Amino acid sequence: MKTGIISAVLIIAAAAVVALVSAAFIVYPTQQALVLQFGEVKRPITEPGIYFKVPFIQNVILIDRRILDLDMPAQEVIASDQKRLVVDAFARYRITNPVRFFQTVERGSIAEANNRLTTFVQSSLRAVLADASFVAVVRDQRPQLMESIRDRVTARAADIGVQVIDVKIRRADLPEANSQAIYRRMETERQREATEIRAQGEEAARRIRAQANREATVVKAEADRESEQIRGDGDAERNKIFAEAYGSDPDFFAFYRSMLAYEQGLSSGDTRMVLSPNSSFFRYFGNPAGNNGKPAPNAPAAGAPAMTNGGQ
Image (cartoon, rainbow, N blue to C red; front, side):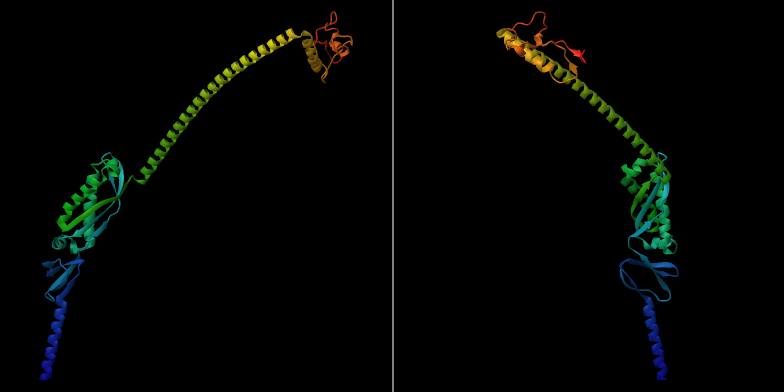
């Protein structure tokens, strides 16, 4: 009798332990929970801690409460100026209404939520960027456009219990074929500009060289004119000095000119002179006075000997 009672107590105790263990559950700070009874939400739990449910009747679904990332495939959109753009965007969101999330998203699945949000973001991207130009998307109004996209997605995501934190456009570029065509066009334009600039440089260089040559010609002409003037002044001064010297001592001047004639006429060379020893050209050789300083009758002037080529 006692053994049966003890066995019954043990069975009851074991059943109580099992029921207690199956009734208790833990919600971590990164989670929120829904207590379901026959598929109906009985109560949401949004704070961490240890909770209990009715064993074998109720079950618990745990839902992530952290900020989640949504990566989407790149899609092609058409801007208002008919430019095609390949847009790569991502979003971040948090599940703020677990009951609504469970009721609207199949099985409360994060993967299913990502699919729904991807649809929301892509449709909002197409709608917003279709009213913006290529330049606005790429450069001028990108922050404002992302904010407008986020507002549209937020309004639609609230219906499934999700709060959209942010929507960002990673990259918005032309398709590869368009990019190559634009690159080639830009390359051609740069080459044309380089050729034009090079031609302008050559023209400027020729203009500068012509100006420099003109200035050099003017300077040279002025220098030649001044040199000729100085040379003329020198010749005039020399002739003046010679004239004064001749007037001061005609005999010495005649002797000096004869010495110059000897130096030039008797220098080595191919030219030969045929003269008589009694020629007046040699009058200073035999008589230092040069025949009393008077040339012989009909004699050529000193310094002007008769000269023949090759002994003729």
